[in-house]
Length: 321
Image 1 (cartoon, rainbow, N blue to C red):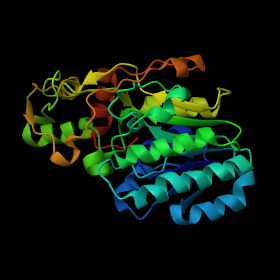
Image 2 (image 1 turned 180 degrees about the vertical axis):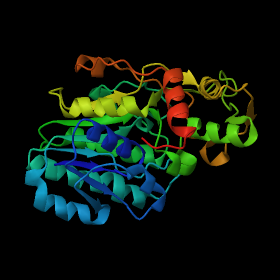
Image 3 (image 1 turned 90 degrees about the horizontal axis):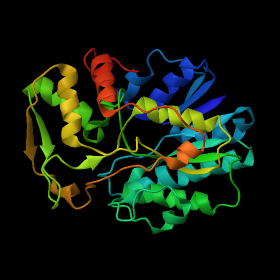
Image 4 (image 1 turned 90 degrees about the vertical axis):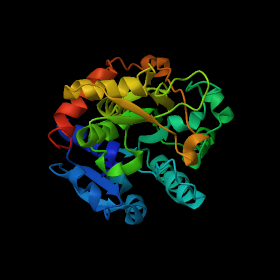
């Protein structure tokens, strides 16, 4: 059996599809299945059982002998959430419990970390373990992921192989339920369909033009390719960046959306909301040498390729992956 937590969410449901395509149907799906918005993400997918997050840990303790690997992608990923109790429960303690069971039963573990751990990027974006303790995340979500990364690196008892994936700006199908946290491909598509134009944030930082904030945008199909590769590899355990290695601007992103739709670009600019303005990242870019050294050689989609696939194959026809 293979466990996928966060299985009804964005990256998790895409991983379930990929595992099905690879011939795996003995899947245990874990999530908060009370969220009706996410039901579409599991339509047509094959699995053994769905287990709620509240019931999963007791089940896992009893059934661990039959589990071959765990993809722990479930978390509170809301960067605008500031209640530390939420992150303590879902991102720190829940992850520690899964880790401990995996360690006790020699089960390989792949879990979702985040590029949010890098904060404003003043120390760069290297996934070198020696730099982890110096990072300064900008929000509680980033701190929760950083705290677990540090805990994992310090643990003497660990799964036989474990990989913390520092996802950069992932976009792609199955994110329609994420609301404000969905990618600007999703939001841009919706704005273009409704208004004919896209709003992007103005720059509030010297040296960056409006809409010129830079991100390492990575297509979700590439992100899950990395997860599947590491889970089946003999790569050294540890933290790995998951990005393309090339930062692009939000203007570039929306130009790709307009191009995929065959529409003339119309981009306008609004103030960055005050509640996130002082915690807003202006540049992220993932050094990818560590993953390459681990043997990963598959080419990542370019921004234009990924956006075109997402828009034409999923957003326009209203399909999930």
